[in-house]
Length: 70
Image (cartoon, rainbow, N blue to C red; front, side):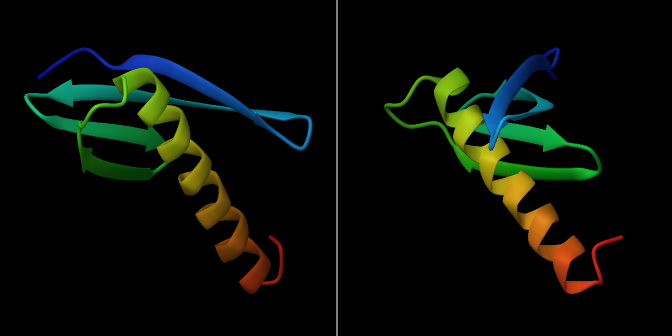
């Protein structure tokens, strides 16, 4: 298993940090207790990981909003 590489994005002025790793053709991005895995295609893993991190952050924000905004 590859060593995780840090990745960060900014959404609405706030920075979110996660990590990603590759295993063959699979890219796994982690943020807090969540993970998302996808097949590596023509996009560089670092760029794809940023997109996946954005999706993970939005999923968490949606879930928190639906639970009363804890």
